[in-house]
Length: 241
Image 1 (cartoon, one colour):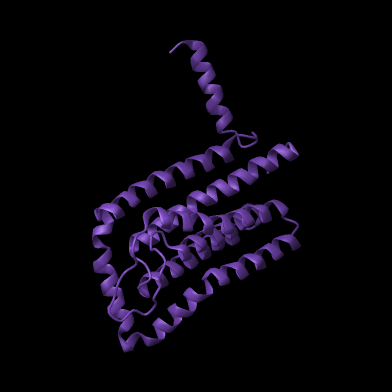
Image 2 (cartoon, rainbow, N blue to C red):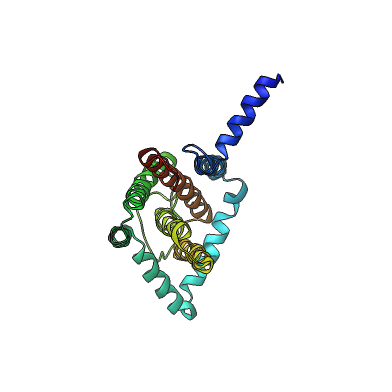
C-alpha cells in the first residue's frame, strides 16, 4: 500500500476512535453494535424460518415450560409471571416510558428524553413491522394460559423491555458518579429484561428464539437511537458529551 494511502487510512481510523470527535468513538461503537445485532438477527430469523439451529429446540422448550406452568404446585410462580408480563404490556410500557420521561425532564436531560421517545415507541412500531414480515405463529397448546392473535417473532414485550431498561441503564452509566451505581444499573437492566423474557416463555406466549430475536432487535434499535441523538447533540453543541 502506498505511503500516502497508509497515512490516510491511519488518520481515518484515528478519527473513528477519537472520543472527542463528532464522528469518533461513540459513533464507531454504535455502528459496530448495530452491525453485529443486525447480522445475528438475520441469521436467527433464517433459522426460525427454516426451523434449524436454535429454532429446532423451540417446541421442546415451550412444551416443557407449559407443563411446568400448568402444574398446580407452581401456581404462585404462574401468578407472578402473569403479573410481571402485564406490567410490561403495551399500556404498562406507555406508563413506564411516561414516568421516565417525566423524571428525565426533572433532571434537565432533554437529549435523553429525545432518545427515549425515539427508542421505545419507535421500537414498538419496528416490532410490529417485523412480526408482519415473518408472520410466525405463536406456540399452540390444548389449554393455553394466554391466548394472542398476533404473530410471535420477535417478542414485543421483550423488545420493549430491552429498549426501556437498556436506555435507563445507559443513562445511569453515563451520568452516575459512582462505579457501584453504574454496575447496579447494568445488572438491574439485565435482570429486568431476563424476567420479562422468562415470563413470556413461561406463559407460552413465545418461543425461545422469539425472545432472542427481540433482544437483538432492541439492542440494534437502541444503538441507532442513542448514537443518533448523541451525534446530533455533538453537532449542535460543538463539543463531546
